[in-house]
Length: 140
Image 1 (cartoon, rainbow, N blue to C red):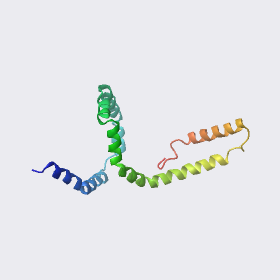
Image 2 (cartoon, rainbow, N blue to C red):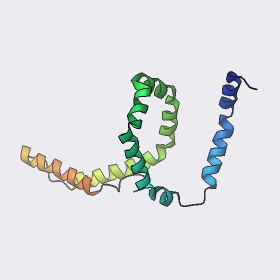
Image 3 (cartoon, rainbow, N blue to C red):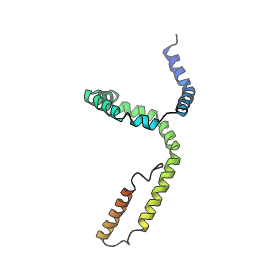
């Protein structure tokens, strides 16, 4: 029988194999992930509400506590950098759309003027950006 230390070491050493298996599982999925996921929205909401109403959610948060959250989060900080880098192309796609939209909007504004005119300009920018909501992301 393995010791706890040996089991922990085996767990850590299996990371590469586990990551490959996970990737293979994702890539091998042939179903409709989005449809299957969104069909469960009511179940997710019901389960979340039940957990909150029973006190399970608060108990879990309180069990970890602020210090536990901080230490666990900082211990996994490399995940943040990995995700940040993995999302770089999508960010580049989105920011290109955003900057293009801003340029189009600003070029169509009347010249700056009085406080009231400038306030109207700012409102116009906000309204036009709001009208583009949902279209400026990497996939929108």
